[in-house]
Amino acid sequence: MVKSEAATVTTTGRDGFGASSFNSAGIWSDASAPSAGNDYIVDDEDRVRTPADGSSYTFAGDSLEITAVGSGGDLNIAGLSYKGTGNTGTITVDNLILNGGSINHISGVEDIFNLGGTIDVVSDSIIYAKQGPINILSPISGSATITNPGSDGDGRTVTLASSGNTFTGSIVNEGRFALADDAVMNFVVGASGVNNSISGGGPQTALDGDFVIDLSGASTNLGDNWGLVTASSAAYGSTFSIAGFTEAGPGIWTSSANGATYAFETATGSLSVVPEPSSIMMLCGALTMLGYRKLR
Image 1 (cartoon, one colour):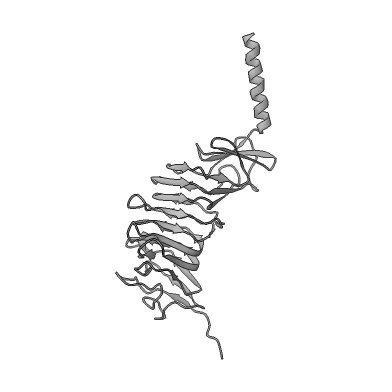
Image 2 (spheres, rainbow, N blue to C red):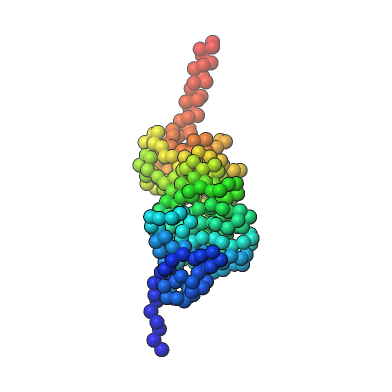
């Protein structure tokens, strides 16, 4: 028996109200439900909705790619749209590729979009918790930018929840964003000022997880600085930590590499090259002694 070759299947439009092509023929170009052996692309301004109930579903295709959207309509809610209900179901896509498109929540605020599988961010894309929370259980890879363009109110938060994230891109948060306890956010720093970051003017940026900072290519000049977290609402929880760094004082984390000492301050969200701790202690001691002699 000759095996049929794998096909690339694309969308031909948008799922309408109450419809879902996530697990049915719907708007797919081959007029068949997604199946193993095929790769699927949500094209241009098209939209695939998830089933409108509280059950868990796994995408049957080998991959699901959300591509760059076009120029019309509300593009932030094209792509893959969550229409599930309740808070226990999980939508799983084992090879979800974000290639310029959007993952978004357009159900109710009490309906939680739990997204499992894997995500690879290959070009700047959107994860939009518009009408309810999105919990990214999937480990995320890639190095492009993820933007959360906003939210309709409290509780509509994009949460990264995986300790397996290798993602080294930037997060632009104009809504609500959280790094959950034990979840990982990776930073790669180079010459002074060259780095990925967490930025944006959204009302919530909650950082309870773990930073992993790659210092292998970092410059070493005293005063070199990297704005890792510039989000206006950044708040660090009690479980926040930085792998390989030591908390030298409240909100100050230090590590030595490349013959230099690096310090991250939560108050500013900046990493910088600082004098060696021993030098600082000697300087403080010298200043104390000088003050004592002057008093005499």
